[in-house]
Length: 552
Figure 1: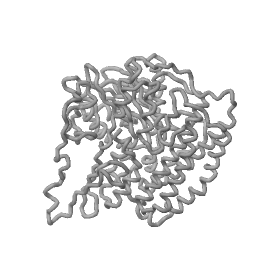
Figure 2: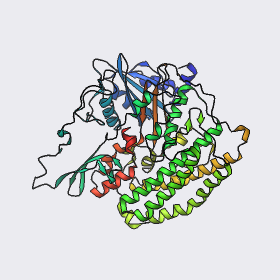
Figure 3: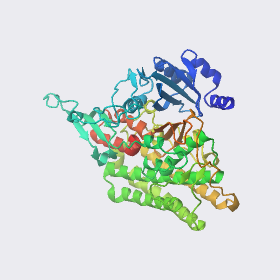
Figure 4: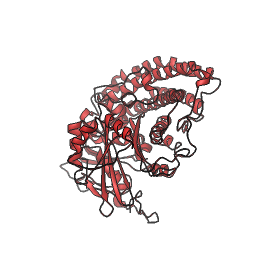
């Protein structure tokens, strides 16, 4: 990085002088990234370093943990941010030798590192001393080798034994003095909202413990992106992470990281188109989240669920007109978007405005059917409690965090696109329960509608000769070698981040996806423990997780 870039990164993260003092005792080198200063620390001083950053510098959000292997070392990167100000960022880089890839676990400092480090161990092969439960998370325990390590042998046979499905409390289920029961939920069950296996230990109807068992849909998305070119081949993949209408939000996460990596500017007109499309995707995602939740809680198939699907289809019709696709949009391009509004423009604008005009009475109807429904309230009010400090420890973001009163939204707090020029509010609720998370999504539908309406006004008035869709981007992108960046956007489910390391070629050397659902789902045991088994189902639905994004 150049000196001005380093100074800018230091300013974003609270000042270089402050960091030099905090790291003086632990840092052995600098390895600055495009978005944040990065300090290299010894593998036996990870916890001391992170604890100081959390307690003395206010970095209470471990946004992402990236693991990777170089020819001469392994490396773990802890991407830290502040919930109060996400533009304050710092990265802690922990190298470990090839012959002994072991470092201290960060889980005692940031609970969210528990799952992230398990994934790093599973796919890369780095071991973490002091980790509370270091075992595979995406692959079966019997898997041989670590698929993202450089020496992985793809020809090695793999066998999954029946012991993988052994009852973890075998021997106690027949105890006449106990009502303890081990209950398998899923992995193919409508209440798990995807291919997820939930291992629940019950005492009567009370949840004693619960463990989400993920990995049933692991599709090697990171590896696919690493083998694809920046300019043309990666963009279609993000649509397939959170596929519930969130495609443009996912595309923006990749676009933001790659554009920062390559120094690409996006024209204002294209930013307006991106912002409008992204908010339409957010609305479609929230409609299906609310409708399916009504189905989970009160079996509202004939009213709330069908109404939500109807309204989602209206949004999908608009997105189809804009992008040419109903699900896998592939509309964003590095430096802008693929094309302008469909012709005739007036008909498309009228279609959008008709939908927005019809929305207020529909929102009232959802409130009548759900929010003011006594049966619904009995199931969700004061159940699934997620306290703010617990949510932060698990790295929760999006409606899950905002339902716990955490005022964190990257659209406002780490501005991008055209959001800084528009009038809208961040929706938060302080109830910390399942009910609050529903209220946040309903409120965000209204705020997204405000944003879309302002974008329509701008697009309608934009001079025809100034409608620039893309900046001038080279046909082949080859960012400078060893350039690193972590960038995130506010997806429908929360902070969707991308880490990219370039090696001077037209494909990334490392591509890491920070899924909001992955971190949000890790908090499920905290939400469900001590509740009734029916509340467990309500808690799972309130997190609105998409397993294709969790497993990637």
